[in-house]
Image (cartoon, rainbow, N blue to C red; front, side, top):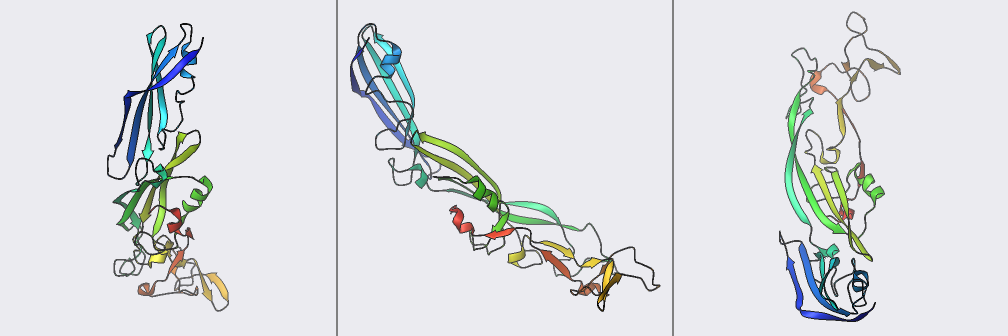
Length: 284
């Protein structure tokens, strides 16, 4: 019950490197081994013999991982063992780490109907009598950027912070405040027992700054109006010309006093997301 010899076979040696898009590199290698043993040697002893690759091991000099080891009995005293490796390689050749692969980048767009309170020129959307018209919307087109790349490490907690943020720096040519991480996934890749990495997919949406500045593109915006007005140092219920409390909101100036001219409507903007450096994501 013993293995007598393990000999690597030149006729079973092979390998390939391929790409589907010119960015990623997929590698595969095959090696064959002639195993001579006593007649009572078991298949487990053949597969565990010194010199036979183990699943999860690297192909020498690469990051390709042994995925399959198959033993075929060709006689009472011999097995042929074929091992296969598969993996990814970086941009600098088949021996390069898959973490160094170039990112896959795709631009697209998305549209959404957003409520609006002013027209394109900034004029309030009101009736001839100055009453706000509710329910007006506009189809807003935003650019999207999808990036797929490999990372050596992945922090769910850090990613969670970015999922509630906008860019504090210029990112992909867009000014601060316009970019937001709207989608993220990370798939665990185990190249071997000693090397792991993550395949990350991220999607960024760039908000068009409609009637605002780029840094406030993702702010919440609302017309400054309410049922209470500021008179002197007091804040009181707004009334109509008959001194009857109003049943619809009235326009307010920036200081909370009554605004009677719809053309001078004041708008409030509130920050919804924190600002973080998107260049630190390492996507591009």
